[in-house]
Length: 574
Image 1 (cartoon, one colour):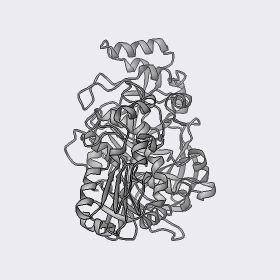
Image 2 (cartoon, one colour):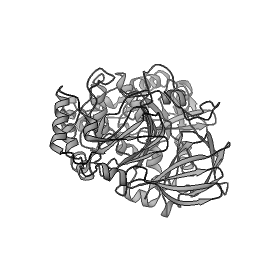
Image 3 (cartoon, helix red, strand yellow):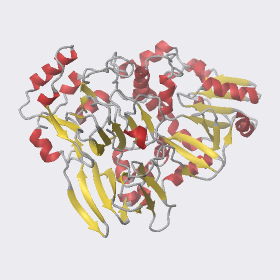
Image 4 (cartoon, rainbow, N blue to C red):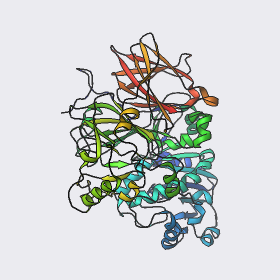
């Protein structure tokens, strides 16, 4: 059933561990790390939530003699007080949704305990919020969100100020997403400038780099194309295409998602002279939002990366849930997010029976639609999707536009490159085909929220006219042509497809007037991204890989490697 879309005789070449080359040295392992940090004076190790503070504490105190140790976990308010502080933002018993809120990190701490801390002699201050106390040397122990989620799923870590490791992972994630990460990011932003060292404990081998080297590396990353480190996850509807094309390991029953450009959760891999260090991609965004995003985009979104690329694999799998994303006013009022998840499905591949569910059929009565959903959810007759929803045949390189408020899902036997605005958690499932999640439990259904956001004017005629393969020629040259493929006029993301057998030039427009570009090589074995002025080293990309071109890059050229027609899909903020 799987059609890999790879050229005949070609092996997959998708790079799962892309790096950003830089210079400088790393201290690897605790012996080398403590040799660097053992300088006398007090040491402050500020940890992002998810860092194994006890292991770091043990490694440091075994190798460095301190007169006094302050572990910030002992200075926190009682768990019940923190729970009460966060309760207004966590949506009660809702298993998914809350209200976004960054609280002052100091509000998690007992003010009397915090005020009573004394740094007598040589002191180690370690833990979340250690910089609130300070020291002679500041070490920032950071942690990518994807790794935090793996540790939460494994029962290794809980939430900020909560003794709740082992709680169901969806509840840990909810609290992290809506409060913990917002709070910790606000605390971390100024530390990125102040930190003397950065500590990476993502793997079993810890690494330490000088703050000046990390900051120089992040600044350099804004002057060239780069990729974030992708991650893959199974799901109840997942398929087998990515396992083959991306050469993923056996073990999971399928791979449903790949987040190939979600800087809020992906990491960057910095390749130093003597090793690699993994940091959250957000560190680059927080340090250099103008250079990365461009002034117009930064003015609109602040230090948030507004464009998301990811994969949805249902090849030899099943349908996604029938779903909808909230309208802008709804997400603002109910969740505190200032823009919503408009999106599109670009088909990298599809079998003969591949399809996309998109919009409602003409004349559908909302009350009948709701009644059918509620009956199905109550265990009655399954929801008759064919009666209520348009089912559109899908083939490779089709592009389906999905502005918020549009009922949709990708059908089985499709391979989707999803291009969307970033707030990806805000999906209301209407019907999940009567199946269970990978945990053996039904996944949450949100009929009330979904019905409040469905635009029943997005019917058959509307979809055919405005949402399915709306392609407009833009320009052409020697060996290339450019098309506008969307997105819908309600959406802030513009997408352009280039077909090319020769080099084609692009331009971000620069920092002052332009914006960041995100691209994927949707056809062809490989290509190289080059600077026409030699401003950065040539950057090779492969089939299905997503890469980011910072606004500061300006002009760049994409040149095919190999014979035949290649294609890229590019997204940017209008």
